Amino acid sequence: MNPGKVFRSVFKAREMTSLSFVIALFLLVGLVNHDFLSGENLLLTLNASVVFAMLAIGASFVIITGEIDVSVGAVMGLTAAVSASMIRDGAPWGQAVLAAVIIGLVCGTVNGLGLMYLRIPSIIMTLGTNGIIRGLIYVYTGGRWVENVPQNFKALSQVSFMGITIFYWSALAVAIAGFLVMSRLRYGRYFAAVGDNITCATFIGIPVRRVKILAFVFSGLFTSIAGLMFVSRIGFVTPMAGSGYEMKAIAACVLGGVSLSGGVGSLIGASIGAIIMASIGRILVFLNSSYDDNTITGILLVAIVVADALLQHRSIEHARRQRLNAKTAAAESPVLKGAGKE
Image 1 (cartoon, one colour):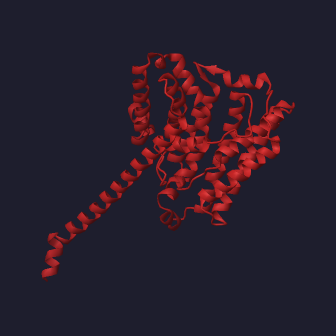
Image 2 (cartoon, rainbow, N blue to C red; image 1 turned 120 degrees about the horizontal axis):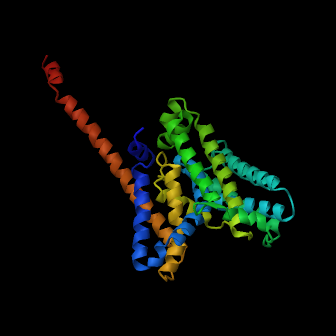
Image 3 (cartoon, rainbow, N blue to C red; image 1 turned 180 degrees about the vertical axis):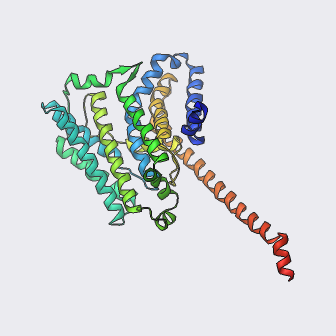
């Protein structure tokens, strides 16, 4: 097998653009402050992106199908609060992990069912569940922080291999596995097919309803894993934990080449976008900037969405011109002209 072909098959045009943007951004900041390019700082930035990476991986399934999930921040906050309090109170880790995963799966299923069976637009459905879950977090925690998470659980986030934490290696493995499933397996390709053209997907027999519900289930699942990683990394959970993370997850997807119009993108690209999201705060510190990272995130998100919309419009116009040229060439062919004379 040709390694070059493998590399090109994994890192397609949009992913390569995102990776090139990360490299160019880091080099530019490094020119201003050389300390930014130190090995220690780069590893810290990479490891710090793991929560965003897991959120973006989950959100990618939904966005690729042409929908949106703005409840991931609240779902992450709830799973983090529940698992952290269980571990603090002495429950076995397995029970805490299971509880977090069940919460994520239930939230994702509710979002998917609301979209497909109640016909509620995904932005409205997930915005509603976001508010409900935020209220549940306050009820569950009593408005107080969940603190005193055992040190041995927090130590999990520090276990590393070659300077990269086991959490990030896990996220990378999930992204690669998801890429292979969505690009090589028939059912995996259904996600992009549904997002690209839902009408055609229905006509050729793709179970659209099942695929979209499954996308939200995956979003809930990976969001719950992100919540567990958040607890281990931070060590405490506030009632507002995860607030604003939905925008960062969506921005990571878009920066990683996942189109908001659906049908285009990969989990690897979303993981690359997560690195950008995690690096913004550190970049602002090294540049001694007073800007808030949410401001930069918003600017990047708007800029990339506008660029993606222009590319989509250009692609549609190019396809339309090709169809017109084909029809014109057919009308001017000698065979058709001869048939017309007869």
